[in-house]
Image 1 (spheres, rainbow, N blue to C red):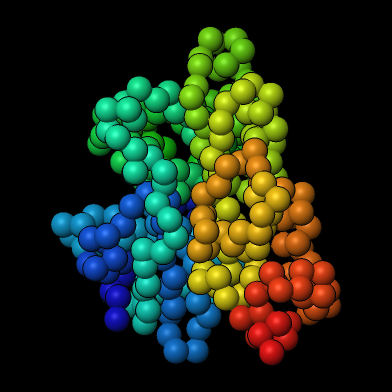
Image 2: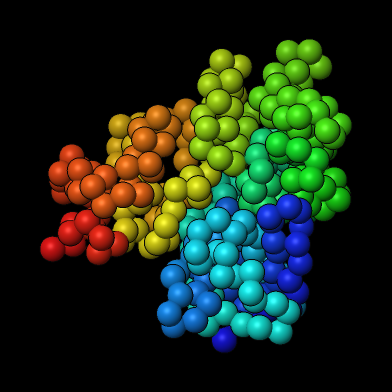
Length: 295
């Protein structure tokens, strides 16, 4: 069992938990995720790692109660425990494999939207610990949905924006990025965008225009987290990839976002899954057991 040592509400409909998982905490790197399971009856839920402390043996997760399983997680409180807490899974951020001295020369900007702020934070923290203070643009619909502001300020040059203008400035993250580059003379070697699919798509359209190589995290389309269900199948540069085992990070300028978003909607229905199985043939994973692709 994996004990919850802290549980708190970060913002409207956004919750944080610190979980005792020493072996996971010892091996975590930014960009990876875990799979949690509340009890024997519950579904497996893939969640991005928001933070980790190898000395205390804790891993921090942030979630939004949307479906049945994540809403059920709201019943858990400090002192309760998860039955399963598996990880770290997925490939770490490519920054983790770079030469530290070369990394210090990089001019990096992050664009996070909504819950995407959670996986942005550990990357910023890791970079800061290795001598790199990146710029971070964090956007939310309204002030009440901004999370981890103080933590982000401590490890980055933080720019905040809200869709409704209720905090700092009005506009999208793309508006801030365009302003930094075109009006404030900022230059970047790489951009990392993490958030809703539509947000990442428009960030990539802008960075392609600005000539900034861009990494995106395809966490939003993961379901099973092991490559079995096939929900996170996408095309990257014309090649079939699965976000949970091949990613979750990819070259954003090569991701077919329109296809991924269309497929995400189709995957929600039995009829849609059956159609995807027919269209995708041998590249369609059927381990979910819902579409018959495993038979």
